[in-house]
Length: 274
Image 1 (cartoon, rainbow, N blue to C red):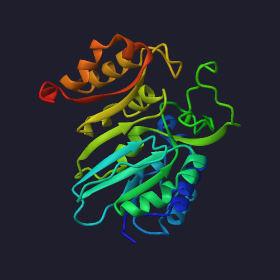
Image 2 (cartoon, one colour):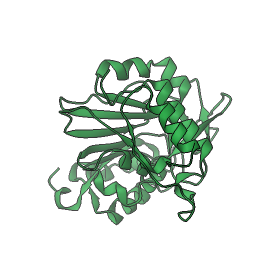
Image 3 (tube, rainbow, N blue to C red):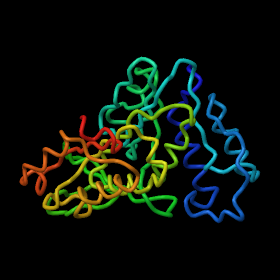
């Protein structure tokens, strides 16, 4: 197997074990945090090795790093998969993240990731907060999907028994990519949680060369209101602007209020060129 590839089970296990053995990464006391050591994920035994280091107090999840085989030039972070994973081009690697074990099984995300050959699959929710775990609300309806922020039950009923899943931040994911590798795209499609995904990156968001996130209109019933304005504010704080083509969607007020759409953010210097 390629050096950076882990089985879904071993990588998911490392996330669960790390989150249950430590204070949540964003809320840990810096004065008592364990000293980071090398925790590169390079083989099938790496998850067990990482857990042993965590148990002995020699490592923290903050030091988690992905490693990639020679020839990989850039990375894509794809959050919120449902039934597909973005296809990496030659010399690219995709890190796919989804919170739902049910959907990962139903849509064979493990098999699809393996078929891409340049792919890592992580099963966890991504968002902002100090909790180690979060409630995942799910629906069996086609397109009903899942989210961690709750919805208007009259519009998006979530009739399945909720699951409890590990919560990580976008900062965890970005910082796990070695500094020398550009992050070509950070994409988030999490049914109303996307503003919190962006917020959870902090200043690490600047490593994303492009940001594509889903926005749910205020009258659609999914997640908090004002998602578009909040996303723009977070992007601007870290040097991003909406592209000209993306801004053109504002001419459709029905879409902005009642629709579900994507926006694209890029560094200020190139926002008028795309």
